[in-house]
Length: 91
Image (cartoon, rainbow, N blue to C red; front, side):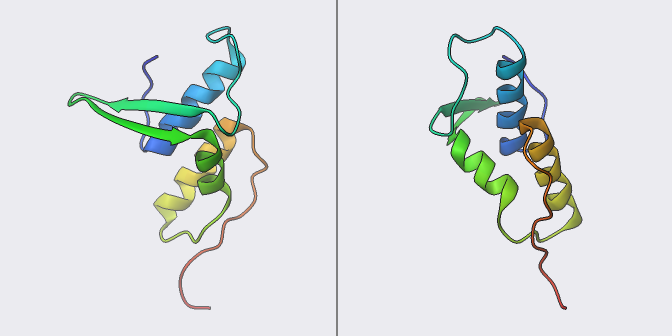
């Protein structure tokens, strides 16, 4: 399937959402499912487990507003609870 995304994890989340909403696959992806993502126009393939995508979306320190928005987008696509992720910087 072809998707448009700003990051590897967003591409994975868009694909997982399409799999869950449609009849594209016989078995729905689970955390251990390995997703193969090819970036175009130069074909570069990445492999990432759904569990890693979910982990990235829900944990870790956010270093920029752009990264925060990317994580929120992936959580939204995966239907995960939209909890705030820690921000880096002075307190």
